[in-house]
Image (tube, rainbow, N blue to C red; front, side):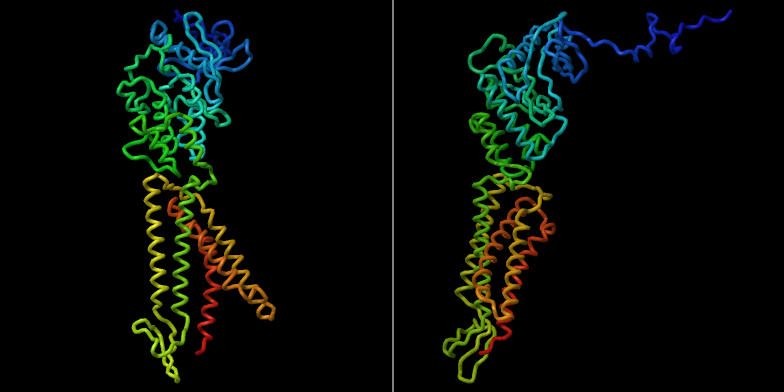
Length: 484
């Protein structure tokens, strides 16, 4: 007698499972969506956490895609969890701001608590860290606006972190998950489940006073945002020392992370103002206007010192005839005596001009040292070696114009029609030299601050060379043809 064979599917011949169902065919069948209540159709799980699971869903009555947050089944009978879930719904319902995830509905169906929210088509911030500086600052500014709106309603979020921030398709930040939010000041029903002495939230983002059990305070949210901004810029949480951040961002982050709440920004709007003042974008030099003023001042000191050095050198190298009794011992470098007793000094140590030039150089170096220390102490060092210097093409353009003007002057001189261009060395040349030196030193300081390798800036030096060659050539011609 042949053994009995297990029943198989008449369609694909696969052995039937319990209940006479074919597992392979069941996988190929398009199952109807899971319904929740009268108007929600759950479509896809988006994520889950300690409080529950979030689904993408279709709201049939509204005719749009929404996000539905379901309370975890194991918490369905937990009075505290249900109250916290309701607290999130009520907190969000009071807030209407573009950078806060909007809530549409809250309810319970078949013993399941659910929250219907705006569906953010994008990704969580935690999946795209770190960010470029300009984008990080923009996200931080948008979160400041979200927190300012929440704080204006007396709501402290208490859990600002990358997992609770979403970037929509346009890159705009959306703050969500107000599950442990609390009202400040007067306690309100439904918002007091988490006791004032507990430190709810993610420890790495909590302010010191929160870890010590202090009551909710908006400045604690700003501390969390400072941690988040540091993470957006560096990809890491702040440690004993802050990571490298461009421009004045280190100064802003350091203030937001002050252990003493009174030393932080007082409001989200104040923090937003500090970030906006930096004016950081992909083309910016990452310096606020007052800091650019100091940068220009240091460049001007360097320009003046360089000009004084050139002047002292020209005066010292210019031949001069003096009386025999006017010769200064130990200062004449190259000299000879003429037949009439006068002395020709071809080069000498010009005490006044050289000492004045040395003083100018000392002042310039002091200014550079003070500026460098200020940058280091204020967190203005911006290690962005891939960003080109904007000053390089400017110096090169000045070099082309200056060198071209000199070449034109020599051409017209050879034809006897130089006119005003015969005054190139003292007038146009001086203006071009001064302007180019100022821009050159500005670029050098920026390269110093941003760790930009000067080997990648050939235009900076080619432009300066184009401006140096003409006056150097004029001086050489003068010295070569000079006769006593």
